[in-house]
Length: 216
Ligand SMILES: CC(C)(COP(=O)(O)OP(=O)(O)OC[C@H]1O[C@@H](n2cnc3c(N)ncnc32)[C@H](O)[C@@H]1OP(=O)(O)O)[C@@H](O)C(=O)NCCC(=O)NCCS
Image (tube, rainbow, N blue to C red; front, top):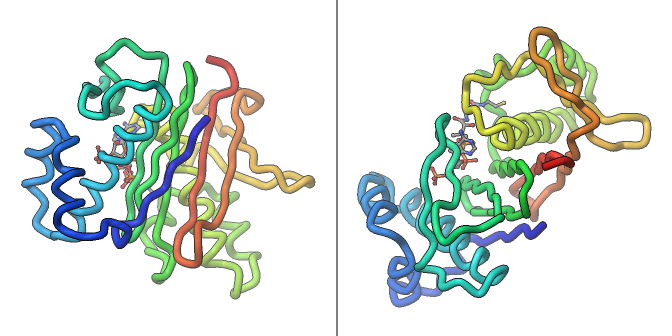
């Protein structure tokens, strides 16, 4: 598995931005043109250029040669050249990231944490997660909130079924050894043993989470 990160401030100037732009497909450029906020546009550009270059570092295929399609529930995948790579892409204020793996479901999520936790996201947490948050000391609560959020999003993205997955029907929890695990609540069915999770801060202002299905 390969995980790559990039920050928008690392783009040294307009010339470098043009080089990144030249890597994108027409579809990606058309999507880029629709961004109203220049900062969001730069992030999108960075994320998609990062994905292309990382796939290329892993394979030797030219970054511009990758073609993508969108699956039934919106998950992007490689259309050409024929490849065993699966990937997940995420971007948030100040950070773009991608994860690439062979033949397995993978989900990556990054969030900007130097802000107050958006209350509405709690609606997507299970009762167990909400209870855990309530019993977390106040100083650690925001950190815990973003950790749950990114782990849940990472699982959602690994499943690739978009918002049709009932987010309150599963709970993320740390076992006695500090390993992140999933518990599924009926009617959601999944085998928790099939999943590996990882969560970590990225610098001071971001948190990242990965979900990987251990069997192809
Ligand atoms: C679109 C979604 C997959 C991720 O959105 P997000 O977290 O806002 O944004 P991220 O930057 O992390 O991910 C966006 C990328 O996910 C990928 N993606 C889109 N649909 C996807 C799907 N069904 N499955 C997997 N990946 C998907 C795309 O690469 C997309 O990048 P692009 O738009 O530049 O092409 C979806 O999970 C969503 O709408 N999430 C918000 C739901 C929510 O409120 N959750 C509460 C917290 S638990």
